[in-house]
Length: 221
Image 1 (tube, helix red, strand yellow):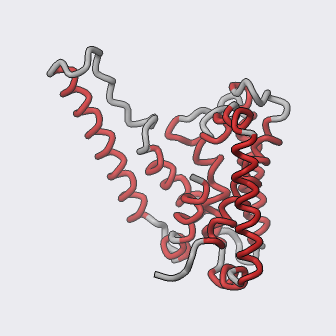
Image 2 (cartoon, helix red, strand yellow):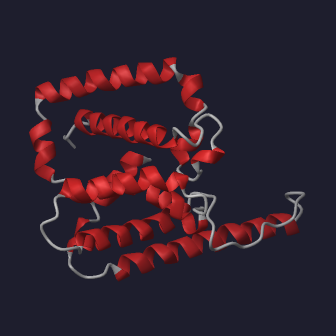
Image 3 (cartoon, one colour):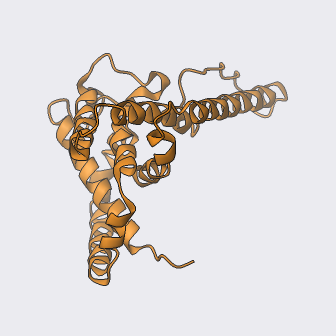
């Protein structure tokens, strides 16, 4: 998911860097979200009415997304965040912007009043990956996609996969960190005090894994 979000940011450069508010894309994502939410609600009501499922129909909720459609609302937040940051006074270094996004992702988990209303918590937690895609330049990949860096990336990727299989039980206990929708105090395997360190570890591990995958993928059709 972080790599997918990075790619979404990479291909949102034109919409965010155009100097104009990305109204068209925001309206598009909200329309898709509303249509998908309404569609699933109608299917659920139809299944209950026809007796296919023995349960009450789920209420129609537009302000909380538990299914895959959360991504549409998150894209709206990311476009807004990205446009706001890139519209600041010119000359701010990209690493400062990315550092601010990372700090926000690390600290939001301590905010007891922060919830997942309109997937805000997930949007803040995953925003550093989107911003990294916005700030990334294509020539950086051309520099890295040389034989030696790619072989190193393949070796690192294989080691990461082996380590994840070896530590599967431990990593599985941290699945709530990966979803981005839980406060630190609500994650039993993390604890409030060390929550930011676990989130930082998630950022580093996801970033390294995503970079290795991008370098290993062939560039031929």
